[in-house]
Length: 392
Image (cartoon, rainbow, N blue to C red):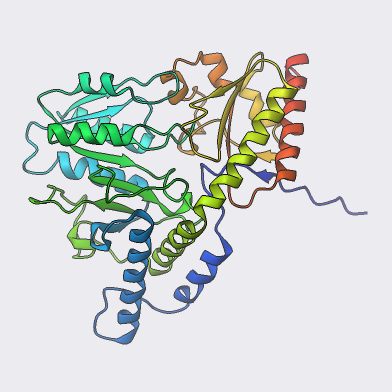
């Protein structure tokens, strides 16, 4: 008798990456079968590819309520973040310009900021409160006469907290500062209207909203004079000469389709996903004592739940989660044994920060899966509290 096939874990790690929506896959598939270079303007293959790219640009623009020409495609939010920060602060005009960001940003902002600091840029890291949010008064006090660019995450990738971007943006406008937002976790999950939100630069990534990996976009508000943005590298005239290189047409089409689906379904999806999140929290908190919810329970992403457990050995917690696929924090830092820098910035003690699970619920999760997760997590936590050596 052959052994039964192992059960596939229930996927609850949607902040790391979302599953590819089958409708997005179907839209991409034809473009994987033809030689389509959107820069080839001498024949019909290139013309059709260029039309597909521009249609995708319009789909992204409709979701964000901005002009299509204000969007350039990138390989993802990491590249878009780097282009926003380095493109402004390494431009010829940026001789004494400074940057203000927060201690709870994604590594895709923190690492470029630190590199800029090593190269002589004044960088101020503003602390966050116990919810991982920026306090506007604290932010105001952090501004210096050198500050020209501000970069703040719109919705935190670990605890889901939504920053007061409208207030920060208004303050930036008063001071004539540029505001960049890493919105990769927010786009497609909560409404964003760039016609009114005072943001000058905004990054997004396809694989955070059920699109393909390897594609994203940077919104660059059209101003007069234009924002001084230098490309990260050279080699072609694509994307307004700010992001040279042949565009991955299939991936761009996938991003556009994902944004169109989000525009159509976001409100109902957010309501349903928030219901699943509340079901998960209520189930865990009713079964377990010594459990802490991290972040802001009100101003948060609908599918985020970040919880820490008293009396649990953090390094073995994830190894026991065989029925569900979750993480302890950012996927970009999951190989590191250190506690989450976001939780530490919030003031969470190290031992508790290590004993943390981040749930990212989404479009394809069901109530039955949430019930399995409640049972699985509760059982593992109780076992580890009773005998922490069982996992060894």
